[in-house]
Image (tube, rainbow, N blue to C red; front, side, top):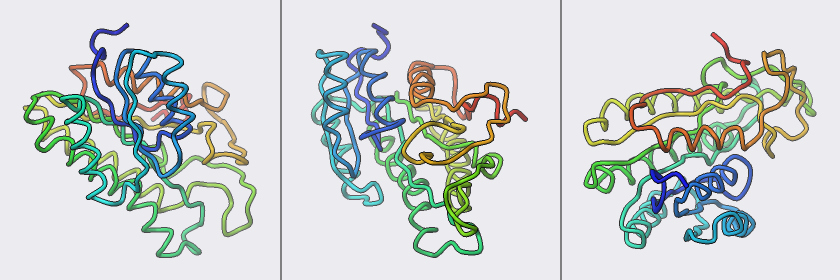
Length: 255
């Protein structure tokens, strides 16, 4: 067991499936107590966590991360229950694939508010006053190579309006997550808090189901949720890394 994570308290958003679920399970393997947050039911993730480590506690919250009051309640109850809030993985996200010509205001703001505003709200609520008061904490924001390079090319199952490539709102929101990560890191380092981002490439999840990525990259396979979870555990344990964007993409975004 990694002693650095033993008895820590980790909040993972979007943890009902995919990257969030895999990250929660990986952190639990290393001894962290887990708080699952999703609009979907997290029963399967909770059971998987307790199967790999029955010694950890698991709390679940069914909330919309676009709602400040709900987020503040999760953070407050986490601190009340565990005595601290040590790790926040901002993973929950949405991805419209409508192109610039056809994307609607509704789809634009859905992606921006979920991916970027949700990350801002959870980071703010966790850091102030809790992580600042305890002089420690890890914020890990799941961005995307779409926020770096405008999205990988792919052949989708849709028509000319929705061709499979992640849309402009997704790219803009994930680029915003990267910039926000760096801004936060510069502000909170003096409080013993690390803030980093992971930028996945093409990953086999519900969001990419049915998409045919070209995989014109060094490692010629789709990534898995577990690939991202490994990076989450690393950043949750790293004390001298902050403001970084760790590309986990098989080399698809080599600059």
